[in-house]
Image (cartoon, rainbow, N blue to C red):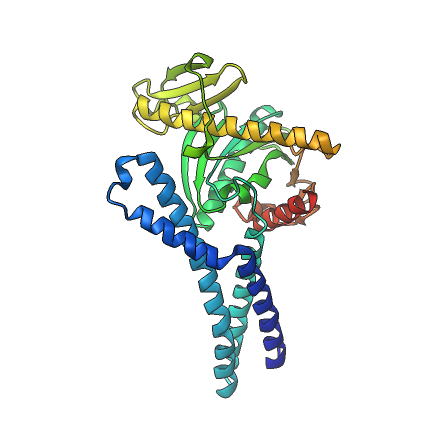
Length: 367
């Protein structure tokens, strides 16, 4: 690519980045950072641990966004200097390196542009992801575990903090369900588009006749509650059961009844936590998960009322939002956006960025 074309590309990226900075409102972000930093420096901050956690979490997210924009801007402005040096020295290798850096900066700006679409009420929060096996027996349980691994690998690729709160293993293979928390700025906004039913078609490793099977797993994504959400739970409306944590194949991993299962009787919502050895800690975590699920239920009910007033008859997210076909051909296709790739192994290893971006843009257009 000639230098002139490089510079034309750089100018377009500068315009895009300037537009993004305007949408993010950098002056407001800096003002928010100063306010939150002052609150976080208060000597009595940790007198109220819950409030302190909210303040430090918000501070971290604002700082992360500012640093991200600043870093991309710096890298973009460095590219012309790299190009100039490469051309002065007639160094083809240096020119190729500058082109690679420009490609990387382009991708970073595209990712940042997607973040500007995440402006929902809870989009900037951490999230809780629950994966459940559905129709398909042992196949579905194995598929649910494959999906769990896909999301954990995605988080690992992105260096996102993950805490697995509970995993219920199936008897023969796979899992019945799992719930884990993803802690990162805009985790909910980004991953909420994964909610729905995921369908797998493959030659079953559990079928002695090697026949093709179809199985289903459901994914639920909810935002983590904060102190200001006011989700009240009447103790009379919940049932608390304790049991021993278990591993794959029913293997006991804890000799005490520290795992906790809470049933919210009015809604039938059931949550569990077994990642702590203390029953008290597990109950507190399970209650937080229940609050998040009730908050999401309330949000969905409010959205349903608004949609009813609008006469919105759009299809439900819960019906086969994505298909993963491993046989007789190789393909993963999102049925909402029609985005598809021919490399299921890469997708199942956590490479789902393309699906997330396409779904976020699709959701924004559908609003």
